[in-house]
Image (cartoon, rainbow, N blue to C red; front, side, top):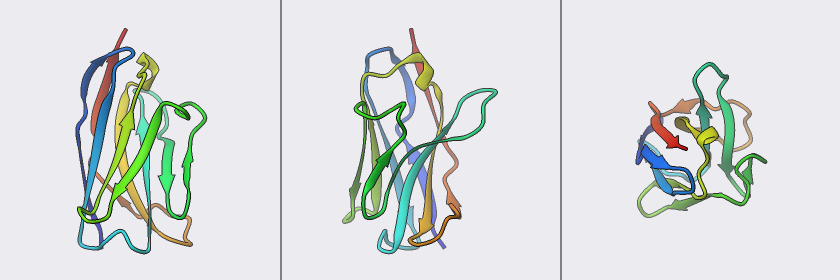
Length: 116
């Protein structure tokens, strides 16, 4: 069992930066793919980035967002730069066992609001 807790959301002006954190407990990162998703009002949840053996980004955030991991702290980060109003959403951290397709573990989400 993996428990995930996000933090770091908030209100930022367009062009600004935020860093989201996701602290994992119950298991270490070893053997898990870690990911970030987001859900804007009235829209479906969408993929943002993931990291297992390699790091993959959605086209909409490529070049602006960076996913990093600190294995000593069991924490994954999402560094968000050059933020746009369309990045406004609730951001969720997720985990899945490597080699599986199902994101079985989710955090509670953290709100990111980008003002124009």
